[in-house]
Image 1 (tube, rainbow, N blue to C red):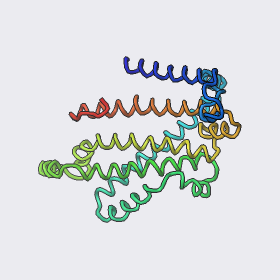
Image 2: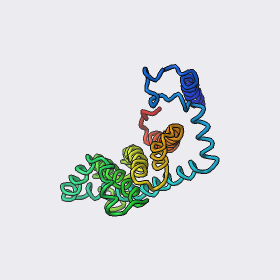
Image 3: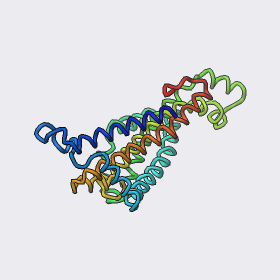
Image 4: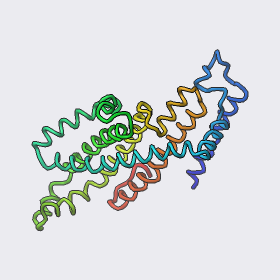
Length: 262
């Protein structure tokens, strides 16, 4: 509670400072370009745009569209990433071929794939989801395959001595031993997926927060631009701190590991 209160106070102070700069024109245009800290809008104006945007449904609809694409793409990425990661772990041939290919693709920024996505899927939701799946799947594949490979061979030998093998060995020994690493990998993958959603919408014009952000840029509506940036940051903070961090801490407590987020 104290931490949350401190953060609220800190944000309120930032808004107050911004509003003061806006109203009193602390920085003349020749000293500080107005597009960096515009005299209009100020912090209060942006908060007003946020509230009005949610009341008229425009920002709410865009947020819902972006989140739905994120959930669909991320769910697909989890299934594909874990499957590919397991195959890379199980087979040296797959590791030398597919594993190498995945590592190579990982070095290519997601947004570079967008021209191909437009050619393959057209200008729409499918292109955005493709970009999400591509980026998040590669991250989860690398994380999961590495996690599976780091399971102690001693644990596996002991389990096999006791009669465990095949899927039972994976379900009872290998997968539980890798959960802390998998959670950390998915936390990174969702952040990549969230960025991919916004980048895809920004370029693809398929609706959502990214499309509104591009519209605000075109109209030079700085209050709309900053409002969407705030929404993006708030959603990212909520998902990271109230979902992944809590899951990570719970897993770490169960496994007896000291979490760096404590």
